[in-house]
Amino acid sequence: MKYSQYRFKFYLNTSHYIQIQGKPGQTHSHTWEISLDMLKVREGFVQFHEIEERIDQFIMPFQDAVLNETPPFDLINPTLENCCEYFKDSFQEILSENGWLLLMISMSETPTRAYVISIMNEDEETVTKATNSLIDNVLDEIKKADKA
Image (cartoon, rainbow, N blue to C red; front, side, top):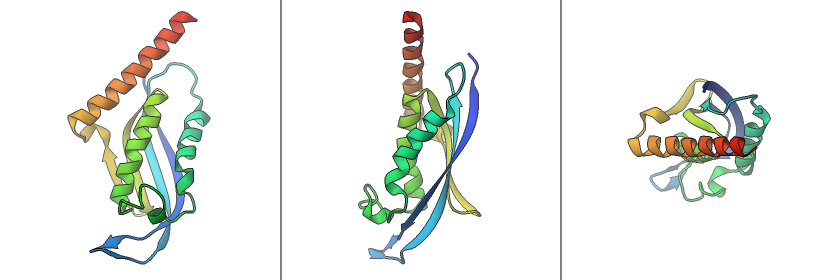
């Protein structure tokens, strides 16, 4: 089986403020760039629009919103790091359901600074869970192909 790696970029226009020592800072806007490095394990033609639509649907509630008023960031301080962690977990689930493995996520608030999470550098349990989910999806695809 051939493995193909891709990088997708998404843009999120949103506002937020950071709680510092229990006090809200100034609300300000960003155009966040979200880069996803992914591994495709399904053979055949890639329908890019399918995965792009799934990610776009997920981030839609955050577009043009104040993050602090949007779950889960009404309870989580929406720092760059916290946002990246939340989106990583959600994107991993969406991607694994569609035969992709998230390798790395990068989120930036400005063109000069980004927060990066490399999935392969995470704890063993997270990598094992992502890998097992991907294997389950590949096996499901094989079963479907055998029935056809």
